[in-house]
Image (cartoon, rainbow, N blue to C red):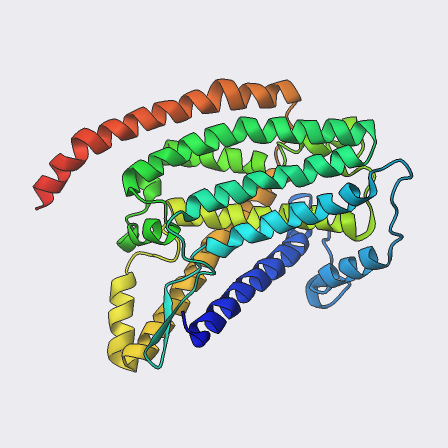
Length: 359
């Protein structure tokens, strides 16, 4: 790798992280707007046009609040917990393919922070580490409510990661690849995985709610039983890091759903649009504009699923803990195993027949 390529890669990675942070920041504004719309009341509308400066006002308020650490807390772990939760959430965005490639003077720049042939394993590995941020914070607070919230988070994540991993196996069996870029490429021309894996999609998105600790699976921070749960003792920017990590996780999971089941930056008629643009504007300019359109389509899909997360939060009530465990272990895991068996049979028996027929 030469210096130019290294600098380009570094710039793309920083751009991906910055974009993720901006989307997460304005998701807090969007959530209040959606909540206001669903509950027939005003959302934020004072700071800036339509309340668009509200996230900056919130950040300023949290920054200037008193930074309090309980006397009996483990100081260093208490500080490390929120940072670990936010860092792991942010790192997961590095391998998401936001678009195809840009061409500048013959050089191609991939719109993906890191191209990895084990991208999906990387995402799951890094996201799974996020629960350590919650566990560390809950334990280090030296508060029984915080510890109970952290234990709930750990057991919930283990339960739902099993079902999520099993639902993902069906996608891997179909694509024969762990690369997110390759999985997107195979869905070219509207051949999206959602048409072949509707059951896997339902299992995956349900587990994503539990992974992000979103309603109806927000039991680790259930204020009616555990005050604030694992972040009861947190305030100022440390609490802000925990809340921000939740919104980053929501964006990352929305992007992963778009990549795995809805074709990522692919859309029906993409080839026709590409040929029209390249013939009218030239190869390089047409290619770059087509890439921008694909990237806009990708973000449109991801933002739709962010809205879906918010809509569910302000519509469906919270589960009881026994209901949550029953759903995870007794419903979703058996359904995910059934989906693997059906997918395996289809790949083994139907795929060769269909391939031979098409040829």
